Image (cartoon, rainbow, N blue to C red):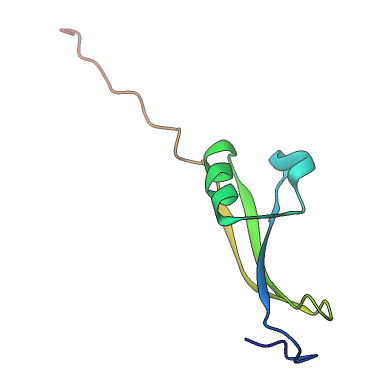
Amino acid sequence: MTCPVCRKEPLTLVSWVYGEELKHAAGSARTADELARMSNLYEEFTVYVVEVCRTCSWNHLVQSYVLGTRGLKTQKPRRRTAAE
């Protein structure tokens, strides 16, 4: 899609990450591969997908979602019987 403001170039999708656990990485743009790696390293963070015009700097939030391991590591231990 071409920029609706300047109409000079196609828009670029950029994924920005935010979360308390990210510390210095919060507020940075990340690739899909980096997001996949980060989703296994951090408990929870939010990704904001923004379409951006590199010519006039117009931007628009397209989507936001949460990634991370929250809830994946908390499996209940298997109960044992007295015979085990």
